Length: 245
Image (cartoon, rainbow, N blue to C red; front, side):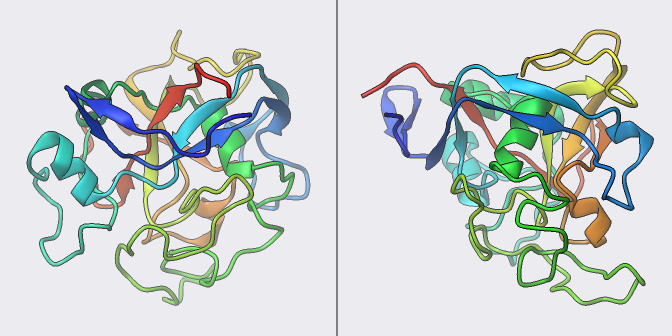
C-alpha cells in the first residue's frame, strides 16, 4: 500500500506538503485522433510504462508554501492574492532551488501527463470537453471572456481520479524535460528527455488562467525559456517513492 500523504523535510524540521501517491501503470501519451486541436508537437502517441509509483504534490506550489521554504516571493507575484494561490513568476532555476531545499524534484513530462490523465484516455482528464466549472481559464474558443480573469486559490475546482487539483488551468507548470518539437525518438519510460533538446528551453504543461480551452487539453505542451518569469507559470514537485506499508 502506498501512502496518500508524505511530509517533505526542510533542514531539521518536517515541512508538511500534501502529496498524492501515484501508482505504477501504463498509458498512451500524446495527442489522439479524436482531438481536433492536436498538433504535431503532441505526436506520435506512444505507450509509456510507469514502472514505479511516485509522490506528487496535490496542488501547484502555493505562495505560502514558497515563502515557508524560500523566505520571500519572487518579483511579479501580485500582492493582493491569498497565500493559497499558486506561486508564479518563478523561473526554471527558481523552481529547481525550491526542490533542492525540500529534497524533491520536478516531474518529468511523462510523469506529469500520467498524473494528469489519472487513468483517462480522453481529451481532458474528465472527458471530451471542459467548462469553467472544471478549471480556471479565461476565454472560450471564440475568444469571449468567460473565466475569472485571475489566479484562483488551489483546490477551487475538483480533484482528478488520482486526487490532484489544478492539473489543467490556473497555472502552466514547469516539467524537467528540455523541449523537443514532437515525440519521435522519445524515451520509452518516464525519465526526463534531456538529450538533444532545445538549449535552455523547458517543457511547460497544463494551461493557465488566461488561456483558451484548447490549451487545457491533457496532451497540450509548449516550451518556455528557463529564465521565464510569467504570471501564469508555476510548478509542482515529485518525490520518488521509497517506502511501502
